[in-house]
Image (cartoon, rainbow, N blue to C red; front, side, top):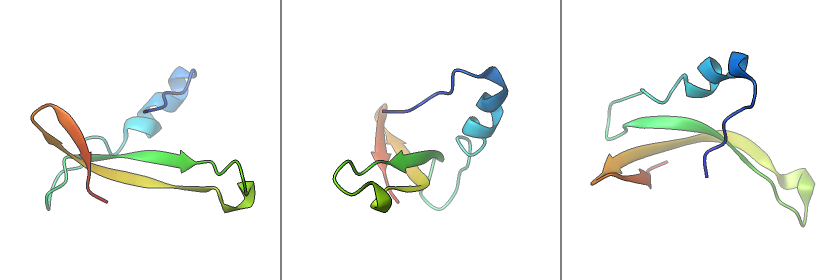
Length: 60
């Protein structure tokens, strides 16, 4: 699931690395993983992906 902010002013920052290419990577998106059992272990980071046959594959 990809999240898009309801605020248009945030869109550019959210899409900033979508066009990142190189070394087997077609792009990346920011991600936040919420742990409902232990919320203090929730974390934010980036998910790097490759597109193969119109399918998004996580690579890092």
